Length: 184
Image 1: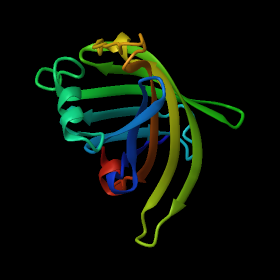
Image 2: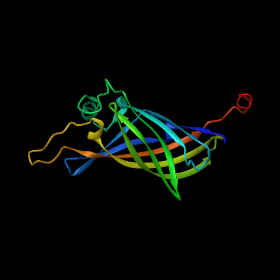
Image 3: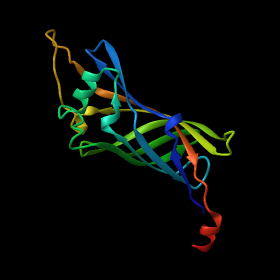
Image 4: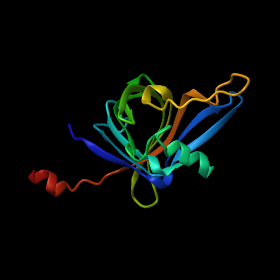
Protein backbone atom coordinates (compact mmCIF):
# COMPACT_ATOMS: atom_id res chain seq x y z
CA UNK A 1 0.00 0.00 0.00
CA UNK A 2 1.48 3.32 -1.11
CA UNK A 3 1.52 6.34 1.19
CA UNK A 4 0.96 9.84 -0.14
CA UNK A 5 2.38 12.91 1.59
CA UNK A 6 0.45 16.17 1.63
CA UNK A 7 1.59 19.55 3.01
CA UNK A 8 -0.40 22.58 4.11
CA UNK A 9 -0.65 25.36 1.55
CA UNK A 10 -0.35 28.39 3.88
CA UNK A 11 -1.63 30.83 1.25
CA UNK A 12 -4.96 29.00 1.11
CA UNK A 13 -5.29 28.06 4.80
CA UNK A 14 -6.03 29.77 8.09
CA UNK A 15 -5.76 28.77 11.72
CA UNK A 16 -7.98 30.68 14.13
CA UNK A 17 -9.46 30.59 17.60
CA UNK A 18 -12.40 32.29 19.30
CA UNK A 19 -12.81 33.01 22.99
CA UNK A 20 -15.48 34.83 24.95
CA UNK A 21 -14.46 38.17 26.46
CA UNK A 22 -16.40 39.53 29.46
CA UNK A 23 -19.00 36.82 28.75
CA UNK A 24 -20.74 39.14 26.25
CA UNK A 25 -18.57 39.17 23.14
CA UNK A 26 -16.10 37.03 21.24
CA UNK A 27 -12.49 37.80 20.34
CA UNK A 28 -11.04 36.09 17.28
CA UNK A 29 -7.34 35.40 16.90
CA UNK A 30 -5.15 33.83 14.23
CA UNK A 31 -1.81 32.12 14.00
CA UNK A 32 -0.22 33.64 10.90
CA UNK A 33 2.77 31.24 10.69
CA UNK A 34 2.14 27.51 10.73
CA UNK A 35 3.08 24.32 8.95
CA UNK A 36 1.75 20.84 8.72
CA UNK A 37 1.48 17.65 6.78
CA UNK A 38 -0.62 14.55 6.34
CA UNK A 39 0.23 11.08 5.15
CA UNK A 40 -2.56 9.01 3.65
CA UNK A 41 -3.05 5.76 1.81
CA UNK A 42 -6.21 6.96 0.02
CA UNK A 43 -7.73 10.18 -1.27
CA UNK A 44 -10.55 9.95 1.29
CA UNK A 45 -7.93 10.42 4.07
CA UNK A 46 -9.35 7.69 6.30
CA UNK A 47 -6.58 6.73 8.72
CA UNK A 48 -4.31 9.57 7.59
CA UNK A 49 -1.69 10.71 10.09
CA UNK A 50 -1.42 14.45 10.68
CA UNK A 51 1.32 16.68 12.11
CA UNK A 52 0.95 20.43 12.66
CA UNK A 53 2.71 23.29 14.43
CA UNK A 54 2.14 27.04 14.79
CA UNK A 55 4.52 29.81 15.83
CA UNK A 56 3.26 31.53 18.98
CA UNK A 57 4.94 34.81 17.96
CA UNK A 58 2.65 34.90 14.92
CA UNK A 59 -0.50 35.29 17.05
CA UNK A 60 -2.72 38.09 15.74
CA UNK A 61 -5.93 39.32 17.38
CA UNK A 62 -5.86 42.66 15.56
CA UNK A 63 -4.75 44.42 18.75
CA UNK A 64 -1.00 44.70 19.46
CA UNK A 65 -1.25 45.08 23.26
CA UNK A 66 -3.48 42.01 23.55
CA UNK A 67 -1.16 40.03 21.24
CA UNK A 68 1.78 40.96 23.48
CA UNK A 69 -0.13 39.82 26.57
CA UNK A 70 -1.03 36.50 24.89
CA UNK A 71 2.66 35.91 24.04
CA UNK A 72 3.71 36.65 27.65
CA UNK A 73 4.11 34.17 30.51
CA UNK A 74 0.50 34.94 31.55
CA UNK A 75 -0.66 32.93 28.53
CA UNK A 76 1.42 31.15 25.86
CA UNK A 77 4.90 32.07 27.22
CA UNK A 78 6.37 32.36 23.71
CA UNK A 79 9.88 32.97 25.06
CA UNK A 80 9.99 29.47 26.58
CA UNK A 81 7.43 27.71 24.36
CA UNK A 82 7.73 29.18 20.85
CA UNK A 83 5.42 26.67 19.15
CA UNK A 84 2.26 24.74 19.74
CA UNK A 85 2.05 21.33 18.09
CA UNK A 86 -0.44 18.64 17.20
CA UNK A 87 -0.12 15.04 16.02
CA UNK A 88 -3.02 12.76 15.33
CA UNK A 89 -5.04 10.60 13.02
CA UNK A 90 -8.15 11.00 10.88
CA UNK A 91 -11.04 8.64 11.56
CA UNK A 92 -14.07 8.16 9.36
CA UNK A 93 -17.46 6.76 10.31
CA UNK A 94 -19.72 6.79 7.26
CA UNK A 95 -19.52 10.36 6.00
CA UNK A 96 -18.43 11.78 9.36
CA UNK A 97 -14.76 12.62 9.83
CA UNK A 98 -12.89 13.37 13.05
CA UNK A 99 -9.31 14.34 13.76
CA UNK A 100 -8.16 12.75 17.02
CA UNK A 101 -4.78 13.46 18.53
CA UNK A 102 -2.57 15.26 21.01
CA UNK A 103 -2.26 19.03 21.19
CA UNK A 104 0.74 20.44 23.05
CA UNK A 105 0.75 24.02 24.34
CA UNK A 106 3.30 25.32 26.88
CA UNK A 107 4.59 21.75 27.28
CA UNK A 108 1.13 20.51 28.29
CA UNK A 109 -0.18 17.68 26.11
CA UNK A 110 -3.85 16.74 26.02
CA UNK A 111 -6.07 14.72 23.71
CA UNK A 112 -8.33 16.77 21.46
CA UNK A 113 -11.01 15.93 18.93
CA UNK A 114 -11.87 18.08 15.94
CA UNK A 115 -14.88 17.62 13.68
CA UNK A 116 -13.89 17.63 10.01
CA UNK A 117 -15.85 18.79 7.01
CA UNK A 118 -13.89 17.21 4.15
CA UNK A 119 -14.31 19.31 1.01
CA UNK A 120 -12.77 16.75 -1.32
CA UNK A 121 -9.81 16.48 -3.67
CA UNK A 122 -9.36 18.35 -6.96
CA UNK A 123 -6.73 19.57 -9.37
CA UNK A 124 -5.78 23.23 -9.68
CA UNK A 125 -4.90 25.11 -12.91
CA UNK A 126 -1.18 24.55 -12.23
CA UNK A 127 -1.30 20.76 -12.24
CA UNK A 128 -1.28 20.34 -8.46
CA UNK A 129 -3.69 18.12 -6.57
CA UNK A 130 -5.34 19.81 -3.59
CA UNK A 131 -7.52 18.61 -0.70
CA UNK A 132 -9.68 20.87 1.46
CA UNK A 133 -10.80 20.59 5.08
CA UNK A 134 -12.69 22.69 7.59
CA UNK A 135 -12.10 21.59 11.18
CA UNK A 136 -13.56 22.75 14.45
CA UNK A 137 -13.33 21.78 18.10
CA UNK A 138 -13.14 23.13 21.66
CA UNK A 139 -10.47 23.05 24.32
CA UNK A 140 -10.05 24.26 27.89
CA UNK A 141 -7.21 26.79 27.83
CA UNK A 142 -6.48 26.15 31.51
CA UNK A 143 -5.69 22.48 30.80
CA UNK A 144 -2.80 23.75 28.67
CA UNK A 145 -1.37 26.07 31.32
CA UNK A 146 -3.02 29.26 30.04
CA UNK A 147 -4.40 30.03 33.48
CA UNK A 148 -4.34 33.84 33.64
CA UNK A 149 -7.66 34.92 35.03
CA UNK A 150 -9.22 38.20 36.00
CA UNK A 151 -12.68 39.11 37.19
CA UNK A 152 -14.75 42.23 36.60
CA UNK A 153 -16.19 44.19 39.51
CA UNK A 154 -19.51 42.46 38.81
CA UNK A 155 -17.83 39.05 39.20
CA UNK A 156 -17.71 38.06 35.52
CA UNK A 157 -14.65 36.40 34.02
CA UNK A 158 -12.62 38.52 31.61
CA UNK A 159 -11.49 35.60 29.42
CA UNK A 160 -13.45 32.37 29.12
CA UNK A 161 -11.77 29.04 29.76
CA UNK A 162 -13.37 27.49 26.67
CA UNK A 163 -11.65 28.20 23.35
CA UNK A 164 -13.06 27.27 19.95
CA UNK A 165 -10.49 26.15 17.37
CA UNK A 166 -11.34 26.72 13.70
CA UNK A 167 -9.02 25.60 10.92
CA UNK A 168 -9.57 25.93 7.19
CA UNK A 169 -6.82 23.95 5.54
CA UNK A 170 -5.86 23.23 1.96
CA UNK A 171 -3.31 20.48 1.43
CA UNK A 172 -1.07 20.02 -1.61
CA UNK A 173 -0.25 16.50 -2.75
CA UNK A 174 3.49 15.99 -2.98
CA UNK A 175 4.90 14.65 -6.20
CA UNK A 176 6.85 11.45 -5.67
CA UNK A 177 9.89 10.75 -7.76
CA UNK A 178 8.78 7.33 -9.00
CA UNK A 179 12.26 6.45 -10.27
CA UNK A 180 13.76 7.02 -6.80
CA UNK A 181 10.90 5.13 -5.17
CA UNK A 182 11.35 2.16 -7.52
CA UNK A 183 15.06 1.84 -6.64
CA UNK A 184 14.54 2.24 -2.90
